Length: 364
Ligand code: F6R
Ligand code: MG
Ligand code: MG
Image: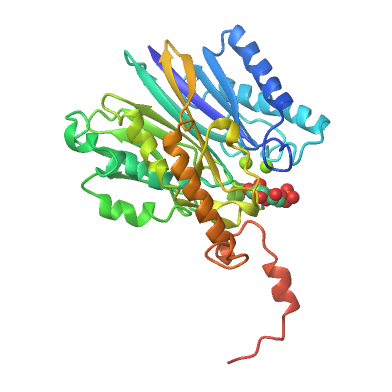
C-alpha cells in the first residue's frame, strides 16, 4: 500500500512571546484535520508543537505536492491564525508570507517534508521537529545516521545497509542541488555539508534500492521573504529499521548537542537540546534551540503513536551538556562566535550604524 507522509509546519503565533503555542491553536488544528479525516481526505493525522511552531503530521494517498493536501494545511494555518489573532498571540500569522494560496505551500512560508513509499510489513518512522534554528541543523545528525560507522554500526555489520546511502544536498542560497554517494564521496560531500548555513541535506536514499530514507524541510524563510520573518525551525522525517538505520542509530547523533544557528533573534549559535515534547518551550534567552522527536509505527497509514522518543533519561546527559554549553556561550554576550557573523544575523542595525559613522572612518 502506497502511503504519503506529509509533515507541514508553520509558526502562526507564539504563546508567550515566541516560547510556545497556545492550546486553543492546537485544538483548532485538530478540528480542521478531523474534518478532513472524516471526509476521507486524510487517513490519519497528529498535531503537536515544538515551541511556537505548529506541526501537522498527515498521512494520505494523494502523493507528494498534492494541491488539496497543501490547501488543507494552508487553510488549517489560516483558521489557527484567526484563533491566534483573537487571543492577540505574538506574531500571529508570521509564517504565512502570501495572502493567497497558489497550489502548493512551497515558497509561501510553511516548512514541508514529504515522502511517498510502499508501506512495509512494519513501517517505523521517526519525525524530528526543531525550534529556534535553521534547516542546516539536520546536516550533522544526518551525516552521523547515514554515513558515520562510529554512530551507525549497521553500515558495517548489516548486509542490507553495507552499500551505503546517497545524499541530496541543496544550495539554499542559489536553489541548486547535487547528489553524493556515501561512503565513496564523503570527503567531497563534507566540504558542502559542513557549511549548513549554505548547504542543507534535503533527502537521503538507500543504495542500491533508491528507496527514500529521509526527507527534511529546507526552506530558508529569511531569503524567501527578503526580510526577517523568523528562523525556519525545520522538520525531518526518517524511516527506520530493516534496510534503514535502527531507531537507536537514528537518535544517537542527538546525544551530542551540536551547535546550530538560531536562538535569540535568530542571530546566535547555540546547542541543539533534545527534549520531551512538553519540555520544548525555549525560554532562556529564547532558547536554547530545541529538538523533539515523535516515533510512529504505520498501520495502513494509521499513525500508531507517537512515542515521545527523547523522553528518556539516556538523554539527560545531552540536556545537561546543552545547558553547560549554553551557559558558556552566553558569557560571550554580543561577541562572536556566540553572535553570528554580521551577514548571517536575522536582526541587524548595521546599515544605520554605518550611516551614522559616515565620514568618521579614516584611512589607516
Ligand atoms: C528567534 C525568535 C525570537 C525573536 C525575539 C524577538 O527565532 O523567534 O528570539 O526573534 O523574541 O522577537 P520580536 O522581534 O517578534 O519581538
Ligand atoms: Mg515565533
Ligand atoms: Mg519557532
